[in-house]
Amino acid sequence: MSRPEIGVYLPQMGFSFEDLMRRARRCDELGIDSLWLYDHLYGPGMPDYPSMEAWTLATALLSRTERLRIGHMVLCNQFRHPVTLAKMATTLDQISAGRLSLGIGSGSIEDEHRRAGLPWGTLAERSEQLGETLQILRQAFADERIDFSGKHFSVTDMPVKPGPVQQPGPPIVVGGVGEKFTLPLVARYADVWNVPTYALDQIEAKIAVLRSICEDIGRDPSTIVLSIEAVMALAADESSLDNVRSLAEKRFGGEGFGLYDTNLIGTSGFMVDRLGELAEMGFGQIVLFTHDRCSDQTLELLASEVIPAL
Image (cartoon, rainbow, N blue to C red; front, top):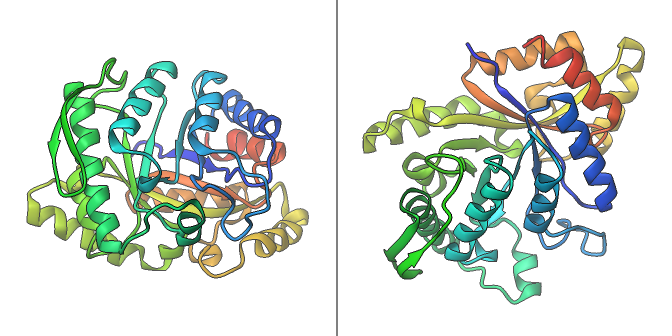
């Protein structure tokens, strides 16, 4: 069994660019595989907090790192026309020499759409739009040209050159567990399926549903990388564990973070065992919220004591 990709999730709310750049460079230097940002116009529930725009930030970070993969958990499909997004993605894949991961979803915060004057629509409508965007992206990456007629988007003989460095394209990550809309899109179009923190108590059931949908449409489910998003509270030693746990509970103890569903709270040896168990369940990518928002100490522990042992 190969080692899973280990990434860190770093929502940019409240950070300066210097803060984010330092953390990205530290991940790059230490050999952490990937770094993930969010795509919101402001921090959810905190509109007066500083928060940098997701794509511009990813471009800056990728242009100043060497080996780190960077993506979003996840881009909001309503924010960018799919042709523009395809052009942005192929360009950034060129700039980064093939280090872009393309996470995308149907949107999760109605309030930011209302404030910005963007259409929100029903979940069914947003899911239809996402399905068309995924088809457009696939076509752009494969053919360097888009010719598409759908319910929401119509594109005529649109070139997308240069194409992506990665072949067949930047890996497309779709997150979510909705059985009516999201998982069918994962089965048809995604390279990677991410289980978000709010669904960590349903992992095995949702994996079974995805496999069933794949079988129905004739796709081998093993061609989809299973990804999980979880909070990790990593302590340097037993004496600091209580303080680490307390900070994790303060920041991520609320409903939706699944802090105790994966139970990633402990020292390095314990973390190696727990992450190994997730790998044995089939997860090829593990994206970690850290309890202290990617401090140097935690990144160094993760890189020196946890990742090598996996």
